[in-house]
Every structure is written in C-alpha cells, then in structure tokens.
Length: 325
Image (cartoon, rainbow, N blue to C red; front, side, top):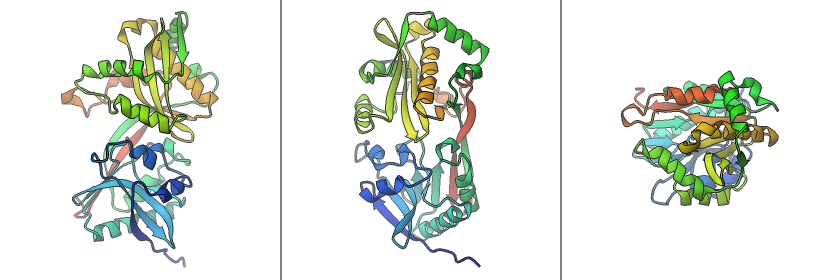
C-alpha cells in the first residue's frame, strides 16, 4: 500500500531566486514561467506571485499567478501559464494538484483559471497536465487552436502546399535577402501599422521588447526579409523552451507583398530552427482581431500557416470553481 505524500502550500514573491533554480529542473517550464520574463512589466500592472507546493523543504509545484479577490489567475502578462512540476508521473502530479486545490480553497480561493501552453512545450508532448487538472475538478472552458510546424527535416518544402512552394520559388527569384539582425526600430512601425487597421496596438512596447531582448539575447530574435535595405517582412520569435520557438509577431510591409517576402521569411526561419535544434515552431493562435469577432478564428491566416505544413495543437483554459459551476 502506497503512502500519500503531504505537501505544504507556500507563496513566494516574484523575485525569489529559489524559483529560477527550481524551474531549471522541471520538464514543462517555459520562458513565460520565468521571473526574469514576468518582471518586464511595470511593477504596478500585475501582482504576480509564485504559488507553490512543498514537501520536506523541496518545491514540487510552481504556479505563477495573480490573486484577484478570490480568483487565482494564471497567466497574468504572458501567453500562457499553468503549473510547473518536478515530478513526472501522472499519479504524483495529480495528487499534488488535488492538494493544491484543497489548500488554496482553505485560504479563501473560490475560483482558479489556468491557461496551459500547447503540449509541444513539455518533454513528453502529451496531455498529462490536463488530465491532472481534470482529475482535480477543473473543467476546460476555452480552447484556442495554435498552428505548429515540426522543424525536424532539412528540406521542409516537402511538407508545404503546392501553392506555398510556388510562392517560395517566386520569392527566391527576387532580389531579397534574409536577416537575423534584431532591428526592432525598423520592424516595430510595421507591426503598429498592421495592427492599426484593427484598432489595436502591439502587446509589447518597443522599449519592452528591447528590454526583454537584452535579458534573453539568445531566446528573443527577429527574422526578416530585406528588400532594398529595408525590412519588407519579419517574424519576432521567443524561444519558449529548449526545443520550441513561438512566432509572437508575424508582420509585413504590404507594399512588397507581391514579392513573397513573408513566405521567404518563414521558410528561412523554419530552416534556421532545424539548424539550431528547434523541433517545433509555433506560429501562434489565429484569432479575428475585428472588435465584433475577436473570439472567432481568422480562417485566411489559419490557411496560410497550414500551407507550411502546420498541425493544430491548442492553448486550453481550465477553470475550477468551489461551487462546481
């Protein structure tokens, strides 16, 4: 008969150095869990802390989150959050999660909302965390598909659609080049102009992106197509975990769209992922940015990403409520 391990509920401030060390030993931690990333926000914007479960002084569960009233929310100020585990077995992470729910409820929490990364971000590429949440009383409330390209072959064109291959061949005949220079000053105005038609602004200011890139020079990169010494298309990426990369911003100057600059840029980014040991390139969610349709899928964008051989994973949001509703 197995003996159930007991865990203590502990809350750490966002700048506690112990957290960074523990995250390095986890099998599902991402850049969006790290203190150095979450602290780029102005101090008064979010009140993020690390809600943890410990046993014998060792941390086994880490949840970056903010408590707003009686509602615990993860993530705050990031694309996803969710619990980070040291234990790997489904039984153990389920036991920890159940105890976490019981202990947070005893401290006055009546609702927990968690948005998880796609399963490509953990070393098992599976859904064991979702199973642990479901077994602990969570219910999936939202599912957002994200387009992920597997970057494990030297000749990715074999996975492209025929139309994508034609556009790539056309682009390769033009006088354009590929750059990995982090020229955010030239790319940011293109981002702003692309989003202006939807009456929205970039998630990050240019200063915030420069700050993040200084802290993560090898993890935050800009890949761009250059035409006549200027950026015609670009993709700003975050290396979210050891073998995955997220294309956070995909934008182009539409004056040069007939040159196939975006197709050329994404193709060379996929090649770079293969060369640098990245297994998955996440091209992100594709939501309609129009005010009245922001929860709808942007089908044309989904089709474009699919033309590069993208498969569909998802960022799922799970919710637990004390009243069960």
